[in-house]
Image 1 (cartoon, rainbow, N blue to C red):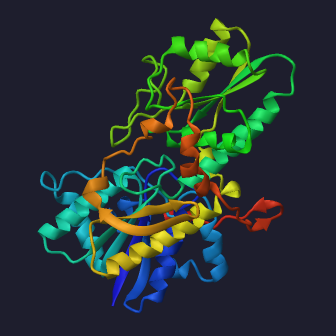
Image 2 (image 1 turned 120 degrees about the vertical axis):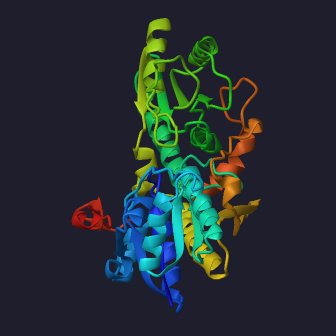
Image 3 (image 1 turned 90 degrees about the vertical axis):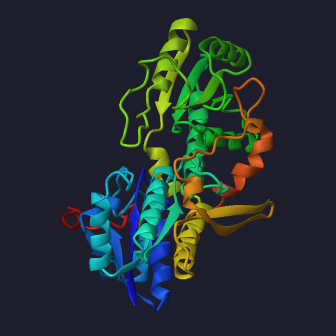
Length: 405
């Protein structure tokens, strides 16, 4: 018999708890697994031996189903960068101490690029000290920028929210007779997947968003203003989707960085709003979707949530088959009918790498997404859930705050 541990890391999504449910449910089926521990605040919980017994918290199937549709990371998150174990072994010794004390034979880390760095480092270190603890990465990120996997859990729901919100903004913006421009700022540091996904509106005959700017295309203010004027000649209300990570002058965005060296980005929408107001002089506003796009579970993609649970479950099977240092991935078989299979890849091939939006998805002017890309996005946003409600508001599963401290 052995115990397992699971943790969540990086930015929240509305599907990351579904992957936790996948790990939990699959582990319940395995007679070789006894306790199922949740690590509080990602790898920090393993370092500090701050674990909770998930079996004592998820007592009924209703608890599990409620957790599955609850947004954000129920176990808490972190942005902790492990040092190179060759240079500093101290924190690794703490991790090993916790794992041995708790009789943990497998550890599952649900997260993005940086979390897979942790998976890779731990698997390498355990190999050098001959510690038989399986380390498996479960992908997660609304940015959809993990290599090898066709897409990432959390992306489909975020894309569904972004497109739906863009649709509603379009309806709101067309009610007045005066010309207007609305700039919608979407998350995406170096990869424009989420911003590009707003183009799914074109599949239902909507002309908006009329302009889409992603980090993978060159951006200039001169061309941007030309684009705006051209679209204003055709549409009374122009809707613009812009990635937070497009290249802009110094000082527009915060220079603050996290532990992995990533800049905290925001402000491009407001900046472009001011430029349009000054240069064109029309009615203009900017909308920053911010955290809503990653945690809006009331509009989650059923496909996304179900896949997220499945990939968590497959992670457990992967560990029990003897694998370690792997990351679970989706491989798409076809767009229609939409078919994917779940496989695994080496963590070192995914850690700290980014998958950019393909150049062929972007039009020649660099200001929109070609219809060629829509069959990729559309299957990921399909299906709706029926959220559990209380007093007219969706219910959420939560661990008592005193446990998290």
